[in-house]
Each structure stands twice: as C-alpha cells, then as structure tokens.
Length: 195
Image 1 (cartoon, one colour):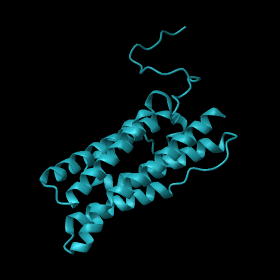
Image 2: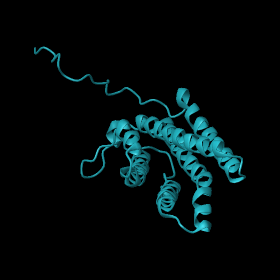
Image 3: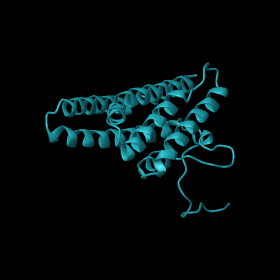
Image 4: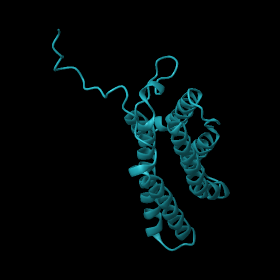
C-alpha cells in the first residue's frame, strides 16, 4: 500500500455539494443595489450643481460598486461545480479569475463580456444535466457590458455636451440591468442545485 503524498494539493471529497447561491452571501446583492442607489444620488446631486463633493462621492461609489460586483461574480462562480467551469478548448474559469480580471484596466472591457458568457454557458450546461427547465440568458449581461464600455470610451473622448450628458446618466440603467442579470444567475443556480 502506498503512502499518501504529503505535497499533493488538498482535494474536497467528490460528493461535497457546492455552496448554495443564497445563504450567508445573499447580502452581496443588496450591497450592490445600495451602492447603485448611492451612486445615483451622488450623480443627481452633482447634476444639480451641489458642488465638488458629489463628483468625488460619485467616483467612490462607482469604484465601490465595481468591487462589490467583482465580489458577486466570485461568489457566483464559487457555487458553480468545478466540472462546469471548463469550456471547450480547455478554458477553465476559477472564481478568483472571474473576479480578478474585472479590475484589470482595459482588459476588463473584454472580460466583462467573456466572464458573463461563460457563466451563462456553465449554467446552461448544469441545467442540461438536471430536471430544471429554462436557460440562462446572457442578454442582460451583454447589454450592461456594452453600456459600460460605451460609457467609458465615451467619457474618454466626448466633446459634444449632449453626448456627455447621456454618458454620465448611463450608470443608473447599467446598475439595474447588471443587477437583474446576476439575480437571474443566482436564481438559476439555486433552481438547478435544488433538483
């Protein structure tokens, strides 16, 4: 009989169920929604000409909301079983990769599309092996990602005052659309794991 390798990485038992989407991490979605609301309030205060403080608050709330969104992505990916994290071509998405790449400047423009498409594909693969009905759709995530990229690129090169106004109003619908996508993913994961 061979001795176990003390240098081998630890492994979870194969029958260990993944964590549930809700439970102790359910607060993340409400923190994200609250951050979106505070960001909107700071934006409106700045638009009304309250002073320089709302612009700083708006920026801080936008950064905080982005970090909470990355944390939410990490949590959702940690509930996806390892077998469903690998796509064709051998591309594996780990929870740390899903969240970490969202905060890399410029690369995140690509990654916000890729990570959400991979998440929807993983959820649909999980769904195919269960008795649950329905599919995870990427339309909300793609809409929010496209609006975010348009906002960022527009903010960098906007010269027309009308366009600048549209660019800076974008965070409110972006937050709502992405929130709906992630709540939908949470519900899909919960439904698949209950079956």
